[in-house]
Amino acid sequence: MKVAVLGVATTKFGELWSSSPRALVQEVTQGALTQSNLKISDIDALYVGNMLSGILGNQENLGAFFAEELGFNGPAFKIEGACASGGLAFYNAALALRSGIFKKALVVGVEKMTDHKPEDIAASLMGAGNDIERQSGITFPGLYFSSTENTDNTESASDFSIDSTASLICPGWRKGLVGWRIIT
Image 1 (cartoon, rainbow, N blue to C red):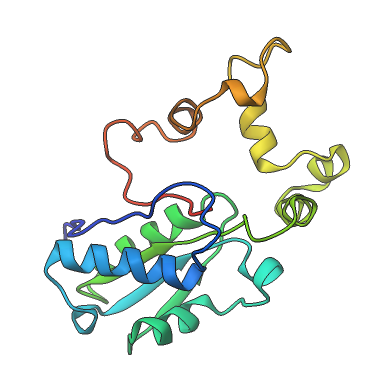
Image 2: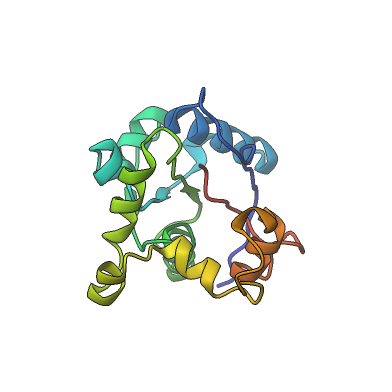
């Protein structure tokens, strides 16, 4: 069975101080549903990709949380896989659709870090690392940055654009193949 993406939406990228995760998820859900000519009642399952809601927001059950927020009455799942949470949510939804369990799924990836202190974010991100990474003090964003080819001590982090960093992490970025973004 083939799986198709019927609608895609994203929020503005940046420091969205006045927008809550609830508002961001409602915005992208409405956008994707509008683009696909579907209603929330047409959806069979909800998949939410997120890493830090339990640590930073004291809310681990994002599937049920956003189902209630969106007025969705069906199975809802939170998928966590560190920086791959959104991709894994998409993957799990695609598997369920291919298996025939569901006919239509809504996949949302959300992460809002700007509302928290940088030291809390760093400590939270360290939770996803292994013992060696934690002992060295490096986080996933630090690992991504260190894997770029321009880290020769002559350039600073401010020399890297979102596009150049995203193209390293996600080759489909420039081709428009990505249907989700990390919402910060």
